[in-house]
Length: 130
Image (cartoon, rainbow, N blue to C red):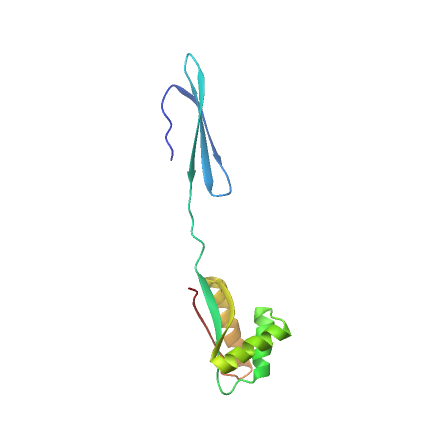
C-alpha cells in the first residue's frame, strides 16, 4: 500500500483503474494552504505463455480425415486446412494454432478423442511457443 506524508491528512481516497494501475489521491490540509498529492504505481503482469498445437504425420490416417479435423477443431477454411495437411504430410508435422495452455490442452484432447472414435492413430501434441 502507498504511504502519504502525514501533514494533518484529512481525507484519503483510493481509486483503482481497471487497466492494472492504481492511483492514490491524498488531500492534505494545513492551516496555511491545501495541497493535493497524486501518487501512481503500475502493476506489471506478464501475458500467459502460449503453446503451439501440432499434428504429427502417420502412415495410416487419411488426408481427408486430417482436413476434417482442421476444419472442425481449428476453424480453418478448406484451403487453409489443405495447406496444413500437406505440411503435415511432407514435413512430418504442422502447426494448427497457438493458444493459451488450457485451450491448447482442450484442443489436443478433442482431436485425439475424435481420431480414436474414428479408429485413426492421428497424433496431436502441444509444445511451448518460443
